[in-house]
Image 1 (cartoon, rainbow, N blue to C red):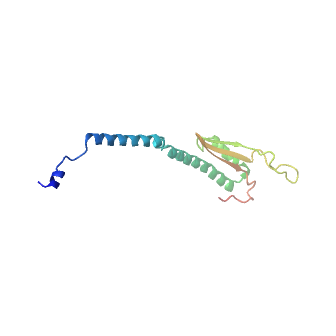
Image 2: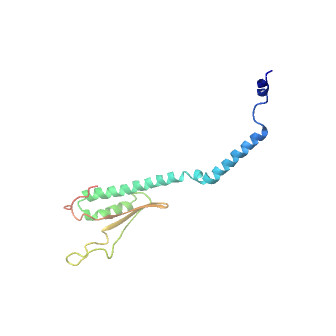
Image 3: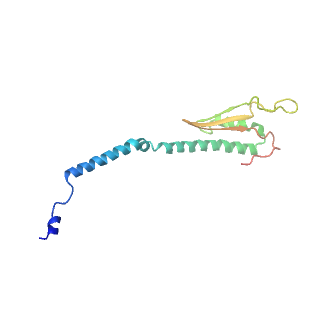
Length: 154
């Protein structure tokens, strides 16, 4: 038997100590990964749920805004469009989580030539769509007072 063959004839594989040391090292590395990234991994679905909820809010708001634009451009009485939109919300057409109320801006309006303020309490409609801690808001105005005024083009 040659010396090279005798050297290669020994036992092959890992000893029990080497296997145990390998398991301990892998367990320690796993502990580090879970400790530093565990919360990020276990809560990684949250951003997806937030985006999904926000997309739902945007759909609701888009429904309100598209009705507003359509009514403002086609209504024979543009002065009543905000009340029409508010009435639709009261009847539940836009779904849950949509709230609307009229707002006034005191101190910001300029008086017209006769000294009167041209805006009334129903000229601005605040619209908000909420779902938990996410809220979208907009303010709609009575921008056309008659059918001779230019249409709103979005």
